Amino acid sequence: MGKLVIAGGNVLKGRVRISGAKNAALAIMCASIMAEGQVLLENIPDITDIQVMISIIRCLGAQVEWPESDSLSIRMPGRIEAMPPYELVKKLRASNLLLGPMLARYGRVELCLPGGCNIGSRPMDLHFKGLAALGAELTLEKGVVRATARRLNGSRIYLDFPSVGATENIMMAACLAKGQTVIENVAKEPEVVDLANFLNCLGARIRGAGTDIIKIEGVDVLGECLRYNVIPDRIEAGTYMVAASATGGDVQLENVIPLHVEPLSAKLREANVEVYEEGDVLRVRAGEPLRPVDIKTMPYPGFPTDMQSQMMALLSRVKGTSMIVENIFENRFRIADELKRMGAKIRIEGRLAIIEGGGRLCGAKVKAPDLRAGAALVVAGLMAEGETEIDNVYYIDRGYHRLEEKLASLGARVWRR
Ligand code: EPZ
Image (cartoon, rainbow, N blue to C red):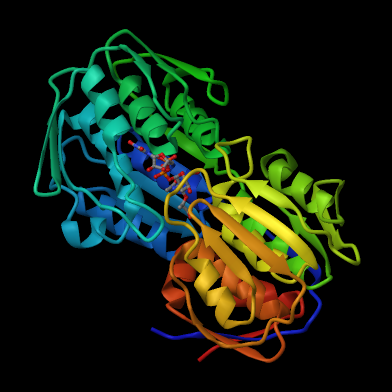
């Protein structure tokens, strides 16, 4: 499976271009199966999660091509040819976003639930509550959800928690429901807004994405969208911002929407990192010394849970005590054990991590427990003295496009073994 090796100590300097957003692209690819016509998506990152999603929708009968290195053309037939295959669905949690689109367009879906993962149990009760409110009949047996709906009907739905996936699944299904659907307490993540914009490009009638309430007027058919440019990946951008800060570097990021990374930029400024816009480039320059900070992960526009592990790595080297509260997932501190193998001083008490920063980090053999923890180990390896060898690098390949190439272009010493 290969390992990623980093020789730490280099300062990152230069320019890096951020790729398209994994979590927007995955949702938009699921929405594409609702289109009667041709769909062309641009700024799609060629990463493992995208490749798996392509395989899944091809199994459903879709024609999927890469006309350009970062563009996808998708065309879905009128009839579904099969249900999403378990051996692919189990690899990709986001396959649960096929529920709404398949119900809405084909009236039936059978999906093996991807189940929990390393960061938490990942229940889907809010997805099911919303789809049932639209008139779907769902059964759940032995980890397989079966849902049918002759015609979905608009409804008023309140989400107990602003779940990104539940917001997306319900919003997609509501596009082809009869009448109006109002969803309250929705997720406001940029990826949800990007999905809504894409659906409207297909002819949906969605208003309010990015606010607490989304209203959808159902339509009979969704047409075509011959050019849709997916937003940049704010978590990839954030990871390079933290890597630049961690190495005392000075990095310019291209293809970033500054507003989308504002929660992180504000926290980095608190830590004595300069973050500012130079035209359409975001510049990150580490101050000296960095200061300890406290973080609470929250739904957008709060501090993103997907940046929590990377910040823990950075703060391991910042003199003083920093605290992180993880409010979104119940098991997202597994990075701490790996960082402690490198010399970090971290104490975990439930949802609270206490980091006594400032000590040396030494390169070690470590193992990525999940995607973002893997990214955090890259940050730690860049800071550490000596060589860090990261196993389970396939986790990192799920979400980071051309990682070594981009890091090496900034001066990092990184290779595969
Ligand atoms: C999306 O996951 C992202 N994945 C995650 O990114 C991200 O961490 C998460 O949103 C939060 O921002 C994709 O978009 C593919 P949620 P999702 O539903 O939709 C609870 C990455 O690294 N919940 O907002 O699964 C759930 O247990 C990944 O790119 C319910 O209780 O997240 C969790 O505690 C990791 N019932 C919280 O809500 C439900 O029905 C947030 O989950 C659904 C969720």
